[in-house]
Image 1 (cartoon, rainbow over the protein chains, first blue to last red):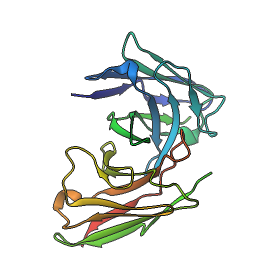
Image 2 (image 1 turned 135 degrees about the horizontal axis):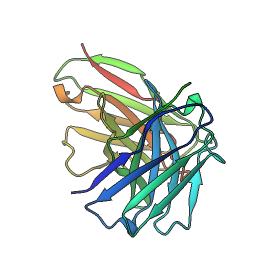
Image 3 (image 1 turned 90 degrees about the vertical axis):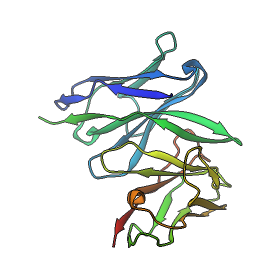
Image 4 (image 1 turned 45 degrees about the vertical axis):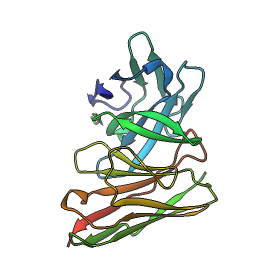
Length: 121
Length: 108
């Protein structure tokens, strides 16, 4: 069974840092592109960042570029998101999600349960 | 950037109703369109990918159609467990995969 389990969320002051983790199991982790997607309270879904299977391709949303760093450890089946210079509008539930591609169309077929990040003084 | 607009933003329906949700892209995205369901306090769940392909394990009352700029998610007979928020997502312009703003389906 595919499982993605996020951890590391919490309350942090503006300007602070936090590192999220996502532990994967039930599939060949090193073969998949992984994503972080967030959802602010009462709002919709926003893609944050993605990292290819071998970390060769890394992308960020403009809203987090220069402040967040995505990484992965294929030996540990783990995905990470280092978040620096946090702002109040980064407050959200952060989900890790696996990207699948069929018929050349990518989609996010498995999601973790999410971890809440609250940025407040 | 490609913008995704869903309509309506919310709807009220009864069990057994046929429900249709529309998603429009600001430019052609071929069939690079996915649909997700999200229940309160839960992670999103993939329903439909590539505009019309049903994800494994998803009930057949869910279906998707469309290509280019206009897409539709249809629930043929609404069930109690279908009350949720539905999001479309384009992945034509990867990796960002823009989501629509969501459509909340409520009980009438």
